[in-house]
Length: 338
Image (cartoon, rainbow, N blue to C red; front, side, top):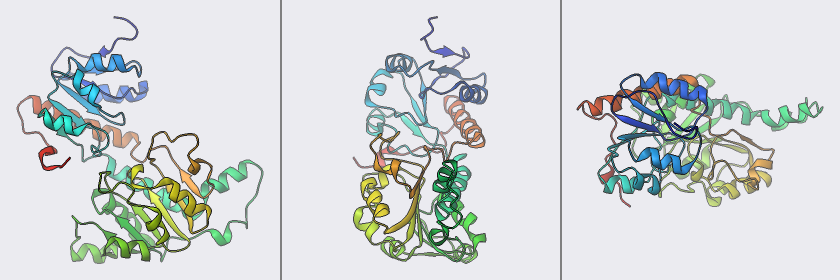
């Protein structure tokens, strides 16, 4: 076998490709979670030709951060199942081709929720205190003991708007409750029961009201045609002066140029982003040089705890499916319009 050939960890069925090329420490976790009942295919590099060649003989593929494209699916003649390591299948798979070929698509509900909620809270606190800027300036020898004082904020007593009250949005609300915040949320598909709203001090409202009344806005939505650039220049202009914006969901939800302008013009106090329209962001993305914006490289779900939980669920579901058991967390693609 050549150095560039995919490696196989067992000879049992089904044959499953882990689509992303990853460091060896991640592969160690993948191998351990796959176990002996999976014929696991791991890529030694990021070569597209090798990826397509590996797909030709696979029964299933696990999609993480690397997008499953039309070309990949054309090469995967035997493919029966696409299993997403997370939940964001809308922008990481060619789901129309998957649907048209009647390939099964499943997502993984477990694993990411706590990690993303904790990361969101960390970004929120850091944005309130301009932590990244203070850290960078201190390393340059600047002691900003007073310069940031009037621009820094506490979370306690603030009105915080959560756009999207799914699993992650709810866990963000749970973690914010001890801070004594007033919570607003909007979600066309979710209404919390009265007891939960009272316990978390959360009130359901519409999107426009949430945007206008919140001191801090945090996004927890999937990226779809209907949500692309939902945070536009107009929406940003309707946020409170001096408010704070957080996004640990999908980069395409935000007009990044408009966000940069809102920060540089001083309409928003600060922002914190874990995701970008293009990943990694282009070198000329203005947010990279904006001191009012805290950035992280799409790592909100990137903990070992989350990885182990997600992969355990992924491979258990794959094994069950090929053993004839009902597929868990299947996405019914025929309900989704083009």
